[in-house]
Amino acid sequence: MTAVEPGRHDGSPPPRLGSHSVSCAGAVLRYTLRPLMKTSPPLVCLRLVRLGARVATFALLVAGGGLLSSCAHSYEVKVDSLAKPKAEDSISYEIHNANPEVSEDTLRYKEAVGFVRTALSGKGLYESPDPGKADLVVNVDYGVGPPQVRHETVSEPIYLTVPGNVYMETIQVGTDKSGRAIYTTVARQDPPTTEFAGFRDYVITTVVYEKHLKLSARENTPGTEGKPPTEIWTVDVTSEGESHDLRKALPVLAAATIDFVGKDSHGQKTIRLKDTDKDVAFVKAGM
Image (cartoon, rainbow, N blue to C red):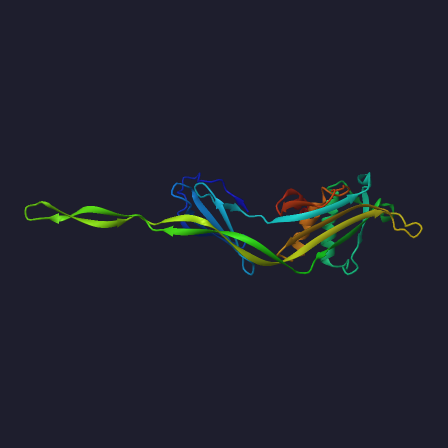
């Protein structure tokens, strides 16, 4: 999700203090505008409610109350790659299914291989029309791991309603027979205020699934003296989240390989991708 710049530019009045909600890609975003202090901008408390999923609470300070304009799912992707020197010189390949439990006749496999072909084309690699003359054999493995339990500590802001100040005021309640004013003293109270009092921490338990895509490229030559062909490069990509929808994650995982094919990442790297990023859109479009 992305936030709009604070303030309104169309002449409409700013949103009122209180509770509001908007719909966004099947989710409901509930937020509350509260004054943090008498002279501060409103504090927007955002609560994202998803059916069948945990509730996440966020707090953002905004000037004037700018709200949300668009939604895009974001993925945290971990990438680990290795490569031999001059690995990028090998540009033709044939694809091999590295998982014997996955049938090559399934639509899922064909779709996954299509994503991989497109991602490799983004690095200048192409599938050889003659498998025997390909420089590389690219082994493809993908899947979803078993459910794992995660515990996350979340902070939520606390607000107190402070009664207004009480003061005495003299007011006229009438006149006597001579026309002279009659006064009395009454108690008055200022409106209550809401003040930020700190945060409270609580633990959220979630079930997550690790989606993975591994590409490993070896020389397209027979092994010698009982040794397998030399491995030229590998790219191992994983992403963890509450969804176990591998089909939705596969184009993102494939897009994450583009910058690492034929390169050494020198350890695991963490990157962020949105399903609207250009590399993801490129992979989804296909060849």
